[in-house]
Length: 184
Image 1 (cartoon, one colour):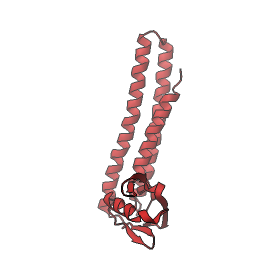
Image 2 (spheres, rainbow, N blue to C red):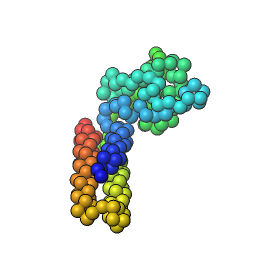
Image 3 (cartoon, rainbow, N blue to C red):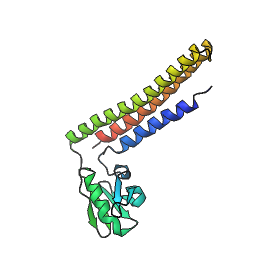
Image 4 (cartoon, helix red, strand yellow):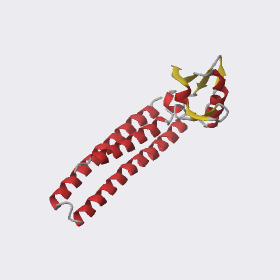
């Protein structure tokens, strides 16, 4: 018995946390802010993410430019980006959508740091829940005599080491993002 499945689940939790953190705005424009926003394109017949509908570029540190592959949906993309409430107004300009992000105020940066800590805690909770579920399963297997006491202790130790490793990854990602948020 190995912990491969548990590692995959925990890694998925870390990846989820990474995606959630990417959506927190720093002082710079970042394609991750918009790439997963769902757009109701073609009169609402297709629901697609921005990244599937066009290219996203960062020509300047404070600006995102979205170039739709199909110009007929540019209005749909602009409308749904506006509805996403990013705190910035998307503007259509010569077949592209420009989004200029104002510099963050100190207060706004502190709000984003608080939001970051909330998202990090969500990630840690996911990892701890996976650990708890596996510990419960190991206890059940031991009580059903499917596992020896030595195997149970060895697996619990490996599980804790894996949990610590994943928690460390989340912490490192959080420190980097917080540093980014605090850098003017």
